[in-house]
Every structure is written in C-alpha cells, then in structure tokens.
Length: 268
Image (cartoon, rainbow, N blue to C red; front, side, top):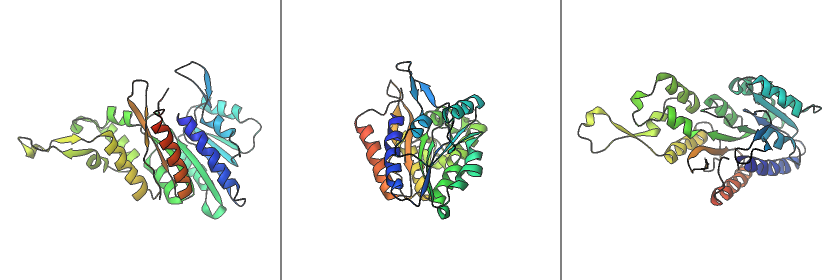
C-alpha cells in the first residue's frame, strides 16, 4: 500500500511541478533497496520504489538512490542503465544525503525534490530530517518504525533500556526529549517519590514526533500519519508526509486518508 501511495503522489507531484518550466525536480530514495521485492503474500516480484519512480509520468528530472549494501547498489545501477540522470550512491544515507544529495536541491538553483525515507529500523537521523525541513525545497515521506521503538526503547520500565538503544532513539528524535514525550508520571501510586512512569500510546508518541517535524524541523505542513499494519493487525510503522508546500500537503493528506479509510494500510 505504501508503494501505491508513493506512486499516486509522485504523479501529482511531477504533473504540478512540470508546469513550472523553470524548475528542476528530483526523486530521492534514502533506503532504496534493490529496486524490486518479493511479495510475502504471493511470492511474485513486485517493483520497489526506485522502479516506480523511474516509470512515473510525467518524469522526474533527476533520481538519487542510496543504499548501504553493495549488491543492492549494483542492482540499482542495472535498473538505471543508460539513464544519465540517475545517480546511485553506496553508503549511509545519513551522510550521503546531507553531503552529496541535498546540496543539489537548493532553492536558489530552482530545484525541488521528493524524498522517501523508508528504513527497516529507527532511522534516519534527525539531522537529515531537519536539514530537509530547513531547506524548504524537499518534501518527505518518512516511515517511523514504531515496532522497533517499542521493542528496544519504549519499554514499560525505561530504566532497564540499555544506553546504546537510548542513543539510537536520541539520534532519530534529535535529542532526549522523547523521554518526556513518551512517558508520563504514574498517578495514584503508594510511593510517588519513586518517580514511576507510564508509557503513552503509540498515537501519542507519533503525535509528539509530528509536532517536532512542524515546530523543530520547520515543515509548515505535516498531515496526520497513517499506521501501516501487518496481517494480524499490529502496527509496524507510521507513514508520515511533511512539506513546505500547502498544495502538496493537501494532496498527500487526501491520499493518506483514502487508504486509511479503506482499511488497506497493511504491510504485505
């Protein structure tokens, strides 16, 4: 379903920006993968986000695909063979995007970009997200891997979480303010001086992150994200959209809402 959402929004994005002939716009994928994936439901190969982006009509002017794995990067190069406007980077997107890709999306150069940040864990680092927000030229779809957060960081007893996991959350959140956002003092306890806390709901956690996207990263428009669930109805991650463009935000919000209301936001 995520791929359908990206595909649908990409068509609207390139159609609108394509009418502004002075602009050049790129598609960026920070966790691109090999370009195609095997469906867990059917076993068939399905196009991944890079393949979908390359086939989008009207077309993007540039494509930037990033992946840590060398074999995946090789597959992406094969997928883009013969296309001079496709750039593949092997490396950590937290470094590659800020150093090599985002500088090519400057407002003064009449550049814009749509960036997909779709990791399997608590990623990307906040520095990437905040840089995109502050630039004002980059719209993002971002996957908040709430399952990873709950399994490794947001425990019922936060004091038992190991330091390395806390640091991962700090890097994703931007600082340690997640602690105050994700826990509240427990009321009605016999010994209040023990500072016992209760974890807030998933919805409250992602709402706090949504607040940060708007008020800290500087995105003017951050629609409510939708939960993406597995086959037994458990939420794996929340799909966010963030932009500085009001029209884009309205379109993305409509698309997200449509899939959520249809009950189709499932991870297959």
